Length: 406
Image (cartoon, rainbow, N blue to C red; front, side):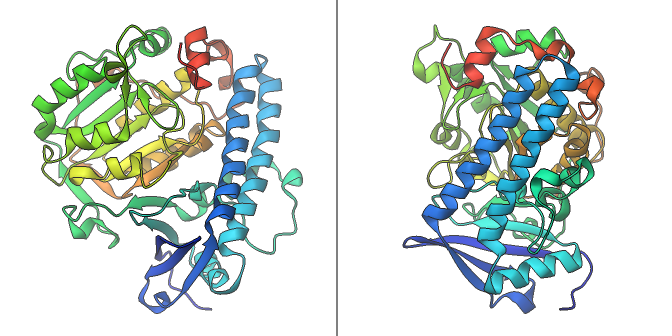
């Protein structure tokens, strides 16, 4: 099968009774291809894969010796790869879907999943691994294969929720970037005070403006600045269903933030085109029900969000998030370009982060601010950087990472 170089394949995802249906939207010569997968089986495979990613993060937190930690994490990555193979085999191992896989392989193409509003299961598509017919068992894979054969790396996998017809059509799947002018670009932060205090000991970055430390502050302050905000940055605890911004002394509405709260806050207040939401807390890409954060983050013209597939170490999350913002704002990178750099630099913990947005948003020209000048790029990809102070987290951080309220 012939294919042009590096083409972009888009699959529309919808629900049909007990099945999930995948329909090719582009390229034109593949638009007749449709395949389906049993919803329950897809949910089961996704659950196994996310458990393996969760185990990867746990191995990082449990091993204080850098070499022991590295070796333990490498074993867990092999398990992640095997679960990723099984998810990929379920989706692309038979009939028409096999043709799509072969087309991606031949063209070194990109892959986007365009998710319909009624879809109840949201797999970690970017963590699919390898191709059909591979004879190398996951337990025998060496580090170079483990680094490069996840589909997020090979095929730049992104997930887009189809909910807002106000999003400019050119940003959907044409490959043309959505360019936002940097003049007037603002970042609004919603931070958990305890987590911020902990990470500032290691990576001090001073936020002076546009910061909320509780749900109530967020709703009040963001309402006043919504029209000017292009990046909404949550750095807080999370459990896959809600964000924890405030403290245990706050009432629940002030302490917690749900997808419905986010939709209500930005709906009709953010004239499109807007920017990006960074949900830098645990399990924010582990989506439940019809869209959850994926749906909320497309409200009002935002392109979506970058989120996590499992529990994340707090200091690592702070470093990763700041690096990401610096690439987006200071160097004019798209979300995809920034993540490709960080997936490599912060490997293997970077397996925890996924792209749940239109991949080609760009802020131009690059902008410089006092905040960005404080950020020092970090590196977790080599053994000497895979240990040290971040091995020991305070009790509150460990408890919240396990989904327990402190």
